[in-house]
Length: 166
Image (cartoon, one colour):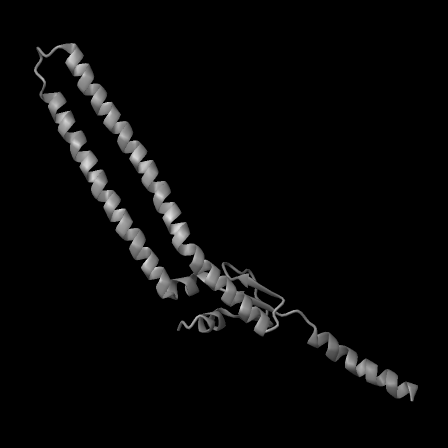
């Protein structure tokens, strides 16, 4: 009886080890995010904002060109104080343009982060759901794998299906 019991344990032990072996998956979130319709809408909003900023910057450039043209058109007998004042206006406008560029860059970055955050969260939740449903131990980003074994699953398609994407 004890022999049969020990034999049953020795037969079942490897099966338990296989059943509890960690399962790994890889996912390419960039492919998933690019396939989402929300991303296109977010990109359109950013492009729209960028166009508005470009239009405003063109106005500043035109103003700069006008003031510089006026400065160059000053006659040689124009008093030095007037020339200095005009040059100061040009320098102030140049600083204003540099500050505008910096503000635009920050604003567009902040806007992109704000628009992409819910999309990234949605993808993360889908990855978590796929991991739980498939009893995965880890799911790694498939950026540049050096080696992927045969027991590692690419779950990108499953995550896309979970999000209703093709």
